[in-house]
Length: 256
Image 1: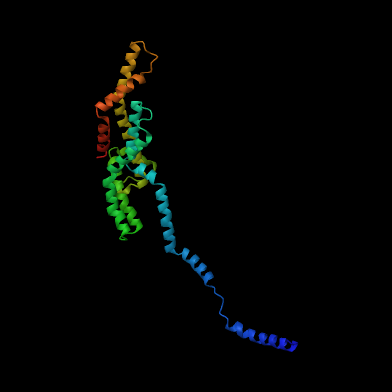
Image 2: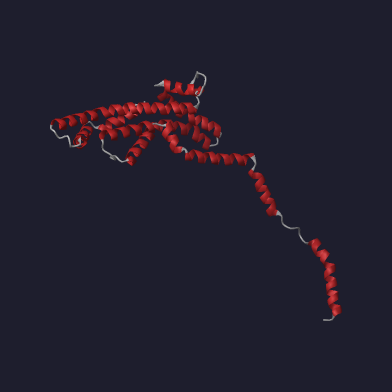
Protein backbone atom coordinates (compact mmCIF):
# COMPACT_ATOMS: atom_id res chain seq x y z
CA UNK A 1 0.00 0.00 0.00
CA UNK A 2 1.40 3.32 -1.07
CA UNK A 3 1.97 6.19 1.28
CA UNK A 4 -0.71 8.20 -0.49
CA UNK A 5 -3.42 5.62 0.28
CA UNK A 6 -2.35 5.43 3.96
CA UNK A 7 -2.55 9.18 4.27
CA UNK A 8 -6.03 9.15 2.68
CA UNK A 9 -7.33 6.52 5.20
CA UNK A 10 -5.96 8.49 8.18
CA UNK A 11 -7.57 11.65 6.86
CA UNK A 12 -10.95 9.94 6.46
CA UNK A 13 -10.71 8.59 10.04
CA UNK A 14 -9.98 12.02 11.43
CA UNK A 15 -12.92 13.48 9.57
CA UNK A 16 -15.33 10.74 10.76
CA UNK A 17 -14.27 10.90 14.44
CA UNK A 18 -16.37 13.96 15.39
CA UNK A 19 -19.48 12.33 13.89
CA UNK A 20 -18.79 9.09 15.80
CA UNK A 21 -18.43 10.93 19.13
CA UNK A 22 -21.52 12.96 18.40
CA UNK A 23 -23.60 9.79 17.83
CA UNK A 24 -22.16 7.88 20.82
CA UNK A 25 -24.62 7.50 23.76
CA UNK A 26 -23.84 9.42 26.95
CA UNK A 27 -22.08 7.50 29.73
CA UNK A 28 -24.32 5.55 32.08
CA UNK A 29 -24.41 7.33 35.45
CA UNK A 30 -27.27 5.23 36.81
CA UNK A 31 -24.97 3.52 39.34
CA UNK A 32 -23.89 6.84 40.83
CA UNK A 33 -27.47 8.13 40.86
CA UNK A 34 -28.63 4.94 42.62
CA UNK A 35 -25.96 5.36 45.27
CA UNK A 36 -26.96 8.97 45.93
CA UNK A 37 -30.65 8.03 45.92
CA UNK A 38 -30.03 5.26 48.48
CA UNK A 39 -28.06 7.62 50.70
CA UNK A 40 -30.81 10.24 50.47
CA UNK A 41 -33.52 7.67 51.29
CA UNK A 42 -31.55 6.45 54.30
CA UNK A 43 -32.01 9.78 56.05
CA UNK A 44 -35.71 10.07 55.29
CA UNK A 45 -37.91 10.19 58.42
CA UNK A 46 -39.62 6.91 57.49
CA UNK A 47 -36.32 5.08 57.18
CA UNK A 48 -35.03 6.55 60.44
CA UNK A 49 -38.22 5.43 62.17
CA UNK A 50 -37.74 1.88 60.92
CA UNK A 51 -34.09 1.87 62.02
CA UNK A 52 -34.97 3.12 65.48
CA UNK A 53 -37.75 0.54 65.75
CA UNK A 54 -35.31 -2.28 64.99
CA UNK A 55 -32.82 -0.85 67.46
CA UNK A 56 -35.46 -0.62 70.19
CA UNK A 57 -36.63 -4.16 69.46
CA UNK A 58 -33.09 -5.51 69.84
CA UNK A 59 -32.69 -3.55 73.07
CA UNK A 60 -35.91 -5.00 74.48
CA UNK A 61 -34.81 -8.53 73.54
CA UNK A 62 -31.49 -7.94 75.29
CA UNK A 63 -33.23 -6.71 78.44
CA UNK A 64 -35.97 -9.37 78.32
CA UNK A 65 -34.47 -11.50 81.16
CA UNK A 66 -34.27 -8.47 83.45
CA UNK A 67 -37.82 -7.44 82.50
CA UNK A 68 -39.12 -10.93 83.32
CA UNK A 69 -37.29 -11.00 86.65
CA UNK A 70 -38.23 -7.50 87.78
CA UNK A 71 -41.85 -7.15 86.64
CA UNK A 72 -43.28 -10.62 87.31
CA UNK A 73 -43.64 -13.11 90.15
CA UNK A 74 -40.29 -14.74 89.33
CA UNK A 75 -38.30 -12.95 92.06
CA UNK A 76 -40.53 -14.05 94.93
CA UNK A 77 -40.71 -17.64 93.71
CA UNK A 78 -36.99 -18.17 93.14
CA UNK A 79 -36.03 -16.57 96.48
CA UNK A 80 -38.50 -18.80 98.37
CA UNK A 81 -37.24 -21.91 96.60
CA UNK A 82 -33.68 -20.89 97.47
CA UNK A 83 -34.65 -20.54 101.14
CA UNK A 84 -36.27 -23.98 101.02
CA UNK A 85 -33.12 -25.64 99.72
CA UNK A 86 -30.97 -23.87 102.31
CA UNK A 87 -33.33 -24.84 105.13
CA UNK A 88 -33.26 -28.49 104.13
CA UNK A 89 -29.44 -28.35 103.79
CA UNK A 90 -29.57 -30.52 100.67
CA UNK A 91 -26.65 -28.63 99.07
CA UNK A 92 -27.30 -28.69 95.29
CA UNK A 93 -30.51 -30.77 95.38
CA UNK A 94 -32.69 -29.78 93.57
CA UNK A 95 -30.15 -28.34 91.08
CA UNK A 96 -30.24 -24.70 90.08
CA UNK A 97 -31.62 -25.60 86.63
CA UNK A 98 -34.58 -27.38 88.20
CA UNK A 99 -35.37 -24.52 90.58
CA UNK A 100 -35.10 -21.90 87.84
CA UNK A 101 -37.24 -24.00 85.49
CA UNK A 102 -39.90 -24.49 88.17
CA UNK A 103 -39.85 -20.77 88.98
CA UNK A 104 -40.20 -19.86 85.29
CA UNK A 105 -43.18 -22.13 84.67
CA UNK A 106 -44.90 -21.00 87.86
CA UNK A 107 -44.28 -17.43 86.69
CA UNK A 108 -45.87 -18.19 83.31
CA UNK A 109 -48.84 -19.77 85.11
CA UNK A 110 -49.34 -16.79 87.43
CA UNK A 111 -48.77 -14.17 84.73
CA UNK A 112 -50.88 -15.91 82.06
CA UNK A 113 -54.02 -13.74 82.59
CA UNK A 114 -51.91 -10.57 82.55
CA UNK A 115 -50.03 -11.48 79.38
CA UNK A 116 -53.25 -12.60 77.73
CA UNK A 117 -54.56 -9.07 78.20
CA UNK A 118 -51.29 -7.65 76.86
CA UNK A 119 -51.69 -9.76 73.73
CA UNK A 120 -55.36 -8.98 73.13
CA UNK A 121 -55.22 -5.27 74.01
CA UNK A 122 -51.81 -4.32 72.62
CA UNK A 123 -49.87 -6.85 70.58
CA UNK A 124 -52.69 -8.17 68.39
CA UNK A 125 -53.98 -4.70 67.38
CA UNK A 126 -50.41 -3.57 66.68
CA UNK A 127 -49.77 -6.57 64.43
CA UNK A 128 -53.02 -5.84 62.59
CA UNK A 129 -51.90 -2.19 62.09
CA UNK A 130 -54.85 -0.91 64.11
CA UNK A 131 -52.69 1.10 66.54
CA UNK A 132 -49.25 2.68 66.49
CA UNK A 133 -46.18 1.61 68.49
CA UNK A 134 -46.59 4.32 71.16
CA UNK A 135 -50.21 3.40 71.81
CA UNK A 136 -49.33 -0.30 71.78
CA UNK A 137 -46.65 0.27 74.42
CA UNK A 138 -49.06 2.24 76.61
CA UNK A 139 -51.83 -0.34 76.32
CA UNK A 140 -49.38 -3.19 76.88
CA UNK A 141 -48.05 -1.68 80.09
CA UNK A 142 -51.47 -1.23 81.68
CA UNK A 143 -52.06 -4.92 82.64
CA UNK A 144 -48.48 -5.26 83.92
CA UNK A 145 -48.84 -2.09 85.99
CA UNK A 146 -52.12 -3.34 87.44
CA UNK A 147 -50.42 -6.59 88.49
CA UNK A 148 -47.58 -4.72 90.18
CA UNK A 149 -49.99 -2.31 91.86
CA UNK A 150 -51.95 -5.20 93.40
CA UNK A 151 -48.77 -6.39 95.12
CA UNK A 152 -47.33 -2.98 96.02
CA UNK A 153 -50.54 -1.67 97.61
CA UNK A 154 -50.24 -4.40 100.25
CA UNK A 155 -47.29 -2.36 101.61
CA UNK A 156 -47.81 1.23 100.36
CA UNK A 157 -44.76 2.49 102.23
CA UNK A 158 -42.51 0.94 99.57
CA UNK A 159 -44.15 3.10 96.92
CA UNK A 160 -44.03 6.16 99.19
CA UNK A 161 -40.31 5.58 99.74
CA UNK A 162 -39.38 5.80 96.08
CA UNK A 163 -41.80 8.66 95.42
CA UNK A 164 -40.04 10.64 98.15
CA UNK A 165 -36.59 9.68 96.84
CA UNK A 166 -37.58 10.85 93.35
CA UNK A 167 -39.04 14.05 94.86
CA UNK A 168 -42.33 13.55 93.04
CA UNK A 169 -45.62 15.12 94.12
CA UNK A 170 -48.12 12.98 95.96
CA UNK A 171 -50.00 10.92 93.31
CA UNK A 172 -53.77 11.13 93.22
CA UNK A 173 -54.34 8.17 90.90
CA UNK A 174 -52.26 5.14 89.88
CA UNK A 175 -51.66 6.81 86.52
CA UNK A 176 -49.67 9.52 88.31
CA UNK A 177 -47.04 6.99 89.43
CA UNK A 178 -44.18 6.62 86.87
CA UNK A 179 -43.42 3.10 85.76
CA UNK A 180 -39.79 3.17 86.93
CA UNK A 181 -40.91 4.15 90.44
CA UNK A 182 -43.53 1.41 90.45
CA UNK A 183 -40.99 -1.24 89.39
CA UNK A 184 -38.58 -0.28 92.18
CA UNK A 185 -41.36 -0.44 94.78
CA UNK A 186 -42.54 -3.76 93.36
CA UNK A 187 -39.07 -5.33 93.62
CA UNK A 188 -38.68 -4.19 97.23
CA UNK A 189 -42.09 -5.58 98.11
CA UNK A 190 -41.29 -8.92 96.45
CA UNK A 191 -38.06 -9.27 98.41
CA UNK A 192 -39.84 -8.52 101.68
CA UNK A 193 -42.61 -11.05 101.08
CA UNK A 194 -40.12 -13.69 99.90
CA UNK A 195 -38.03 -13.30 103.07
CA UNK A 196 -41.14 -13.56 105.25
CA UNK A 197 -42.17 -16.80 103.55
CA UNK A 198 -38.59 -18.07 103.79
CA UNK A 199 -38.54 -17.40 107.54
CA UNK A 200 -41.73 -19.41 108.01
CA UNK A 201 -40.24 -22.27 105.99
CA UNK A 202 -37.07 -22.25 108.10
CA UNK A 203 -38.85 -22.74 111.44
CA UNK A 204 -39.76 -26.48 111.28
CA UNK A 205 -36.36 -27.41 109.83
CA UNK A 206 -34.60 -25.33 112.48
CA UNK A 207 -36.53 -27.17 115.21
CA UNK A 208 -35.36 -30.50 113.79
CA UNK A 209 -31.75 -29.29 113.77
CA UNK A 210 -32.01 -28.14 117.40
CA UNK A 211 -33.58 -31.42 118.57
CA UNK A 212 -30.97 -33.51 116.79
CA UNK A 213 -28.08 -31.36 118.05
CA UNK A 214 -29.40 -31.52 121.64
CA UNK A 215 -29.82 -35.30 121.42
CA UNK A 216 -26.31 -35.84 120.09
CA UNK A 217 -24.86 -33.61 122.80
CA UNK A 218 -26.75 -35.51 125.49
CA UNK A 219 -25.39 -38.79 124.11
CA UNK A 220 -21.84 -37.43 124.08
CA UNK A 221 -21.55 -37.62 120.30
CA UNK A 222 -20.32 -34.10 119.88
CA UNK A 223 -17.89 -35.00 117.09
CA UNK A 224 -20.70 -36.16 114.80
CA UNK A 225 -22.08 -33.28 112.67
CA UNK A 226 -25.80 -32.91 113.44
CA UNK A 227 -26.60 -32.25 109.77
CA UNK A 228 -25.81 -35.87 108.90
CA UNK A 229 -28.53 -37.06 111.27
CA UNK A 230 -31.06 -34.28 110.76
CA UNK A 231 -31.08 -34.40 106.95
CA UNK A 232 -33.01 -37.69 106.67
CA UNK A 233 -35.55 -36.44 109.22
CA UNK A 234 -36.00 -33.21 107.24
CA UNK A 235 -36.59 -35.11 104.04
CA UNK A 236 -39.09 -37.45 105.73
CA UNK A 237 -40.94 -34.51 107.28
CA UNK A 238 -41.08 -32.68 103.96
CA UNK A 239 -42.35 -35.74 102.09
CA UNK A 240 -44.97 -36.69 104.70
CA UNK A 241 -46.26 -33.11 104.84
CA UNK A 242 -46.43 -33.00 101.02
CA UNK A 243 -44.12 -30.01 101.12
CA UNK A 244 -43.97 -29.26 97.40
CA UNK A 245 -47.75 -29.10 97.21
CA UNK A 246 -47.91 -26.70 100.17
CA UNK A 247 -45.08 -24.49 98.90
CA UNK A 248 -46.47 -24.16 95.38
CA UNK A 249 -50.02 -23.60 96.62
CA UNK A 250 -48.99 -20.82 99.00
CA UNK A 251 -46.77 -19.17 96.41
CA UNK A 252 -49.53 -19.07 93.81
CA UNK A 253 -52.16 -17.93 96.32
CA UNK A 254 -49.87 -15.15 97.57
CA UNK A 255 -50.40 -13.37 94.24
CA UNK A 256 -54.18 -13.55 94.42
